[in-house]
Amino acid sequence: MRSCHSLFVLLATVFIASRASAAGLCDDFYARLPNVQRSLCEDARLQPNAARSVKGRALYTRDIRPDDARLRVLVIGGIHGDELSSASVALHWIGLAQAAPSQTHWRFIPALNPDGLFSRPSRRVNANGVDLNRNFPTPNWKREAPFYWAKQTRQDPRRWPGKLPLSEPESKFIVEEMQRFKPNLIVSIHAPYGLLDFDGPLAPPVRLGRLYLDQVGIYPGSLGNYGGVHKGMPVVTIELPSALKTPSDAEMQRMWLDLRRWMGERMGPSTTVLAPVPAARK
Image (cartoon, rainbow, N blue to C red):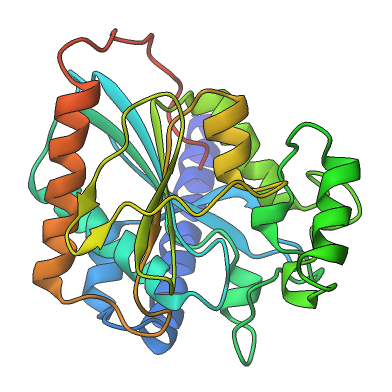
């Protein structure tokens, strides 16, 4: 009986600590992110993952999983900490996914780079000064990523790829999620170029809301290059028009509906049902 009581106390303590941690995060998001009310974050019911940032901040996720899911989609915001609108849009989309269930298992990571996001001022890079979207292990990374950084960016510190591929806990976490979750699609939200990019084997979406397809190229160490080109996981890269301001609520909903429509056309009825995967790590 005592052991059962101790287990109950432990679980209750973990639950309370998790709720308190999420509440603190929502306070931080409300203070930092554009167009994010505290209630929007609270309704998202984000869960802290076991993974941590360089500075030890939890990486939060949210799964929305119907019983009849046919697709798995990973949505990532805040890879670059100064692209505040990307994390905001991910939070708004969690609400839309909850409001209109579909045959899709959504996994949201609204702020992959919390250290960059909560810096004063916010920074593109993580706490080690690494551009996480140049740190993925694309082929020939050790030759191509440093060369591109030195020659094409003129050693721009905002675009440093790091000393080695996957040198950062945040980029490692995404690769682990790709291996564990096995998404049919990755949606990576960025800013501020106001366009739509795509890498992968499918026919790309022509538009999402007011954003039109304009494939900008392939970069050593980028998620689109790693996931879409070399792993065959289609990657939709959304470049919002502003890093500091979200599109209107109506426009975010149009983008969401266009994404859902394209998924239905390109990934829907003919997609094989994949085997169940474990729930997200808490």
